[in-house]
Amino acid sequence: MKRRFTDEEVVDLLLSNDLRQHDQALIYLYEALESVVIRLIERQGGSREDGEEMLSSALYGLFTNVRAGRFQLQASVKLATYVCTLAKYNWLNQVRKAKPWLGNTVSLADEWIVNLPQDESTSDEHQELFQELISRLGTKCRALLEAFVEGFSMQEIAQMLSLGTADNAKAHKYNCLKKLDALRTKHS
Image 1 (tube, rainbow, N blue to C red):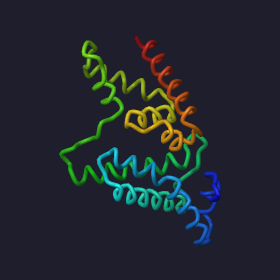
Image 2 (image 1 turned 60 degrees about the vertical axis):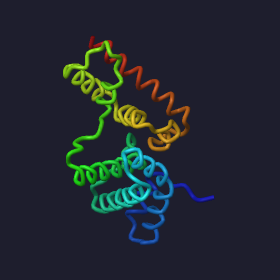
Image 3 (image 1 turned 180 degrees about the vertical axis):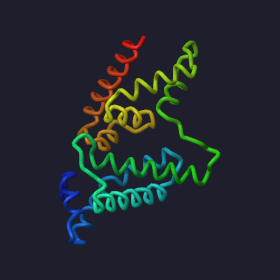
Image 4 (image 1 turned 90 degrees about the vertical axis):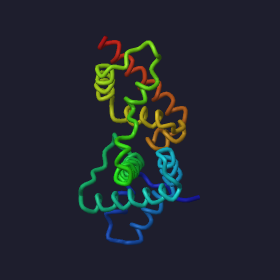
């Protein structure tokens, strides 16, 4: 069984002057996040190879940011989330450069507007309200709901956000939706 590292241990390995420790940390992260990042990129229209390339690029970004002192580990953001976010935005930037006519990809707000029942307003005011309400949620809730809208399974979300199990991710999703609904109700 392979050794598991905490986020703190991974950062310490990347900060060391031993190249073997750098390799150990990067290989660990690559193996732990490979399937999640590949699936993320495939859901954004990329291939398996694109996913592998984006993961490598994200790990390089993490490595250089840690070594340059531009990365600070925070309790509210897990290393896996940081790497997945880097991979996603690297991919989106690559797609935008290759196909500028695509514009921005569908955001959580756009997805919410698209899925509204026909009798509800889909005005700019409605979309602005939704953006405002989402911005009031915590980082973890926003990340969870965005991953859910993008089609990730609860198990994948649990892994990306270090929530443990799919059941924990479901409970967090339920609580986030309750918070969002409470904000909407309070605003009405």
